[in-house]
Image 1: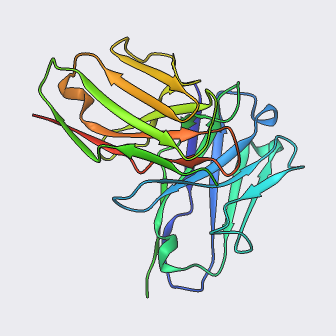
Image 2 (image 1 turned 90 degrees about the vertical axis):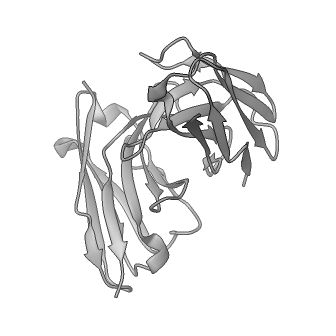
Length: 119
Length: 107
């Protein structure tokens, strides 16, 4: 069974940093690209970042480029999102997502980690 | 960036009735269109990919159709557990983009 468990969310002041983690299990993690998708409370879904299976290719949404850094540790079956210089508009649930085998769509989702940016 | 537009924003349907949700892309995405269901307090769940292929375990009352720029998600006979927000997403180009969602209410 595929499991994705996010951690590291919390309340943080504007301008500060946070590191989100995702523990993956139930599938060959080192054979899969992975993504982060976020959702502000009561709002829609926004793709944030994606990483190839060997970290050779990483992409970001324009809204987070230069502030967020996605990485992975295949030996630990773990995914990370370093979020710096946080803004109030970054307040959201951050979901760790595994795409489908055919790619592009998001087949498995974690339960989400809430990041609240407020002074 | 491809803009995805969903309509209506809210849909109120009686149990047993048909629900039809629309999604339009600002440019062609071929058949690279997915639908997700998000129940209150839960993470999204994949319903449909490739515009019309049901994901594993999805009931047959959910069906998807369309190609190019216009897509439809149909719930043939609405059940009370279908109360949720539904999102479309294109994966034909980067960045991956979602529609703003349609909330399905039980009348």
